Length: 212
Image (tube, rainbow, N blue to C red; front, side, top):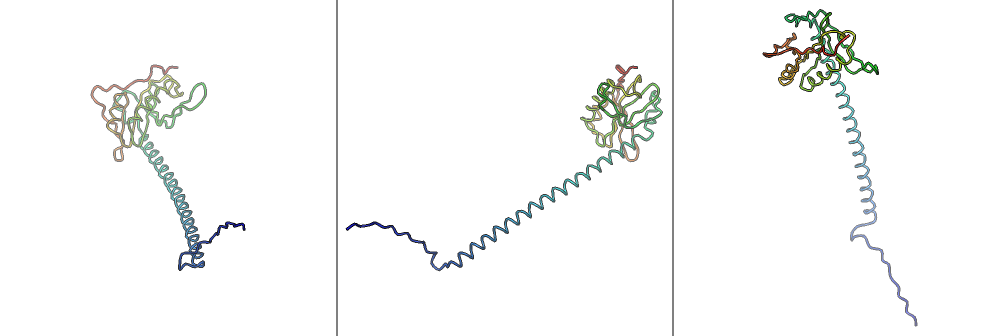
């Protein structure tokens, strides 16, 4: 007689007291909660994107406001600016705004003069900032070098001076500007004041390479 080993496979019972219907209901509830969680995550993502859009929009408006303030300060500074230098022998009698400086070889714009004070012998390139800081002074030095190397027609053959103006001027920027031979102006209330230079100040004349 041949004995055959058989292996019984048993199907586990549900925990005592738990019916199939209850397990099925639990599975459906779990699925519902997962779908609800997914919906909430999508809603959170949508809200974050909307918040990001609003922040970008606000940033654009703030940037536009900043540009408007800068343009207003420039307009206030430019108004009869030449009169601020009446105590000096320059004889400025007019001002030009947004004078472009181009590379002679490529005709590419390489700088812009916010305000150019002018007469037949002297010109003064004035850079205007809402908040004047050290980096602005450093860049104006580079701008002056570019103007000397590629003088616009109104600058060509003139003695070139430099100045800086700001809605506010930090002490460090003021000191560096004077050391660099720039005049400094600051908006105070509704007027633009030419700040008194320190003892020993000498306005730098950038006329070495500005020739006909």
